[in-house]
Structures are given as C-alpha cells and as structure tokens.
Length: 317
Image 1: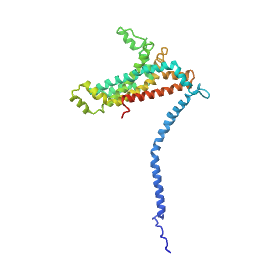
Image 2 (image 1 turned 90 degrees about the vertical axis):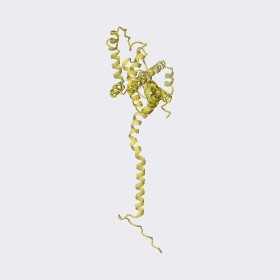
Image 3 (image 1 turned 120 degrees about the vertical axis):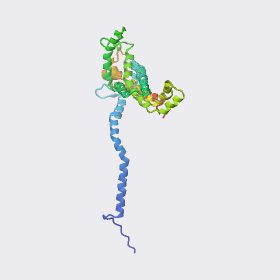
Image 4 (image 1 turned 60 degrees about the horizontal axis):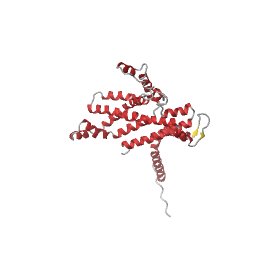
C-alpha cells in the first residue's frame, strides 16, 4: 500500500491548499473592492442629487394631482388642476408674456454679446481681460439687485435716465408704469443682464477656431465680413446652442427681475408664469395648482430647450 505524499508546508507552517485558498480569497476581495470603488466615489453626488433634486421633483409631480391649501393633508384631485390650467386666462396671458420675452432674453443678448466678442478677437485689444470681467459682472449679480437698481434708474421722478432725457429736450416716458412699455423695458433689462455671459462664451469659442481657416479665407479673397460669415459664425455653432438654450431657460423661468421692478404690473402686463405660480400657491393657497404650473413650466422649458439645441445643431455631434 502506497503512502500518500505529505503536503508541502510553507516556511510559516501553512500547507499549499491553505495558501491557495487564502490567495483566492484575497483576489476576490480585491476584485470586489475594485468593482465597487467607483460607485463609492459617486455615492455622495447621488445622495445630494436624490435629496435636493429627485425627491423634490417627484414630490412636485405628486402634489400637482392634489388639492391642497398648504395645511392639513392633500386630497387627490386627478387631472383637475391641469384642466384648470388649460382654462385659466391668467395662465395663458402669463405664458404669452414669457414667449414675448424670449427675443429679449435669448436672441438680443446673443447679438449684443457676439458683436463685442468679434471686435475684441479681431482687433487684439490689450484690455480684453478687463472687458471680459466688466461685461460678465451683470450676469453674476442677483436678479433682485438688478431689478432694484434699474427701478431706481428708470424712476420717472428722480431717475437719472429720465433726467438725462429731459436735459436734451425729450419727454421721458414712464418706463415701468406704461402699459405698452413695461414688458419691453423688463426685456431690455434682462438682455443687459445676460449679454455678458454670451460675450464670454463666444470669445472662448473663437479662441478655439483654427487660425488656418482664417488664413484660407483671406487667400480666397474674403474680407472681415466674409471671415465672420464663413469661419467665425459656423465655428461658434456649439457655443450658439449653449447660449440660446441657457437664455431660453432664463426667459421662461424669469421671476426675480420682474418681481423687483414691476411686480407683474401695471395691471398684469408683465405677469409671467413664475409669478402666477407663486401667487397661486402662496397668496390664494392653491398649492396643488401652483405645483401644476411648475410642472407645465418645466415641461415647456425642457421641450423648447431640446428644440433649440436641435435647430442650432448642438445635438448633431
């Protein structure tokens, strides 16, 4: 009868099967740790997003199907709030005012930001960084502060704008109190606050356009305007998509500037969806209806932003 060969022992007294088992366990632990490690780094971000974005969004959608006055327990109302929104003339007029503000908040700032960016880039001005900082400052100012400052500037009694118009013999209007001028005036204030952002984005985009394209355009006989149409503008396609989509979102969700300047007046000539939403939820205590307006505003903003990106070309690549 043959005797079985004894297992070889390691210098520490461990047999080969024990060493193999320990090595396999350590390999599995390393593999498990490496597969879970990236998710552990992402966990804080997921928690913050879930607590401050996902849960409030789900709660808002749920409240939009209820009748609630802000006290007690909400009662399920089905689609009645959405039906009321479709029939609400104040909501329709507020949404129309938001649409009228889109050219002021989205298109006009893009034009006002593109022109100085082209001039600074082509003329190679020495003080370009100071232009960049100075023009960008209004964009980072709180909207309430912008509204308060412009309400003082446009004051019909002691405002410096009307005082300057009087000195040159013009009859100054009541900018924020005129039924015809109030909404365009608020739109121009929004354009002033946003064009610095457009300027910085366009200037950064022009710096990445290859210089060889401009040289080729000059060899083909293109002047300054030809370079702009054939090289600069096509090269800013992505930046244009970003600028228009961001400004479009600002036009649809505008609240603070209007609240600080006109409060939705005169009458309801500058009332927008955000103001109507706040009034519905907190002034007449229709919280369910207010959240319904918030959901509709979010859906409209998402749809128009995606449409803008598609039309400009930001989603092609």
